[in-house]
Length: 354
Image 1: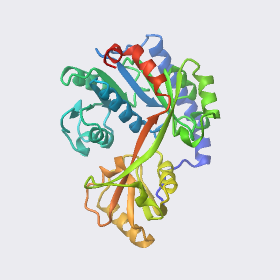
Image 2: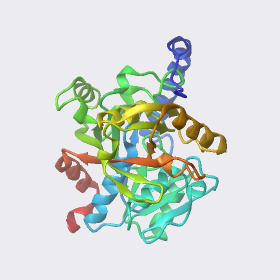
Image 3: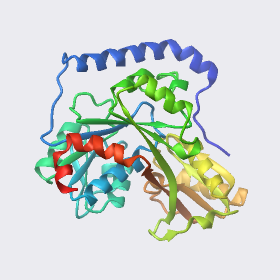
């Protein structure tokens, strides 16, 4: 059983003219900022943006987590700033101050809460205005560098380095602009990136058409390969389980993310048998009806337990009568030296503290 939301090809074709108009508008907006016709505000510390061209599924959260962890390990005080999609609160709000977590999923959103839990010692702040959230992180929490999560389209805030993620198995050139596809802007906008990180690169090999296309569209950008791989399983109590628990196990794959097919493929590569799959819209808040459906599907299809994502696990707050494990994903940058060279150019503190 699948609850999916893929675009019908006929509908995509009919919506293509709207996609052309939207893409043109986004390109014009980017041009106005590039020429200085629209103002950009600047934070008093370096800002590193991590973003993408598509609506999701590129591995942005694992990459942001990796970068913040590495910067913190080098003696810097990084802050991750993000919108906090799906939260019930408003305005700039501290999620983690480097010592403790200050809110739950309803107050701060799923992505922010996952980042805060995975990054002890790192500041995490949410806010509709990334500038206001950045000011809070710098002035009140002492952040020395701001990592702007999902920031490629946040053109009103000055960035010292733009890192754009491209998923190796779903290149932007093969997709269409909203509402006909999943792209937020035209693929050629990649030329504005300083660094292009090719995620899930281990699935396509070191030399491929995606990398060739990136070098053609964004010749000035540095290109790095990123492996995004499953790391471990964690249950609702925080207990860690080995990936071997999935081998030949009949499981229910549960997801409410931008790229559910990738999540399900990861489970199958780990040896799991997908007895059933349930897909919900990205950032879906699970209610009692959903929990009942999950339990009934497990019984009907013989699933031994539920496997979901880390972001979905924090939204599964209601009691559930079947075991639930979250598959956590790690990012590893194979060409890290190239990335650190670009970072050192815009972050003098990095050169001093390394």
